[in-house]
Image 1 (cartoon, rainbow, N blue to C red):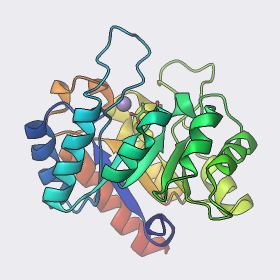
Image 2 (spheres, rainbow, N blue to C red):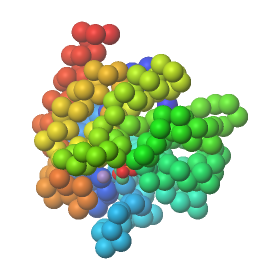
Image 3 (cartoon, protein in one colour):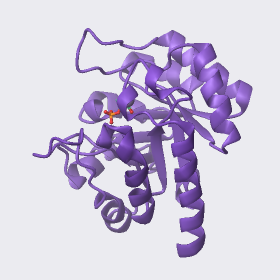
Image 4 (cartoon, rainbow, N blue to C red):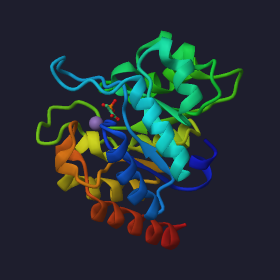
Length: 247
Ligand code: PEP
Ligand code: MN
């Protein structure tokens, strides 16, 4: 977690793990770009029960294997208390998704593991509620939470959610908490992900979590908002330049 306090980091990878071969190919390309954290969902919280729900335990094992083979840290969402131990063993950083942010039993159970936890903001959650939720995860005073702004529900409908970048300076200043930004789920459209990423960097975000794939159009889940490697390279270059100029 200190990684996200001291230096800017990018977590990238597909919305969901689809197969070993596909994840390995994408992860290898990401690693070549200098990405240190690979994301991929195994237990997906889909709005429709008809949609692909993820590869479950098999997905966790694939992500873990790819991470170890390539020397890239892994990030994946935990949705159930009975999977915490298994995931904590195989995955470096566990994520609590926007839909689970108010699942206090899950949060409390996560206080038992040592892994850093990315706590995504619920879609209608205030900063105060978000910070209070992180108190459930705390382990005897040690805060291992990384907050992730991923957009909130407003009256605007042209983006999937409205990216509230005010949370970055407010949480970091008022609560001394590291905040990273997920521009993908906020935008819902890959054409806007680069601009939102640059805005998040300018706002002082400690990192980004971005849906990215070698072949975005082939993604089973969230293809529309998944960016290709050239767009990710643009974000990486901007982050390096920006940090050099404004550090
Ligand atoms: C995700 O990161 O795959 C995801 C589902 O995000 P959120 O919980 O923010 O909707
Ligand atoms: Mn997604």
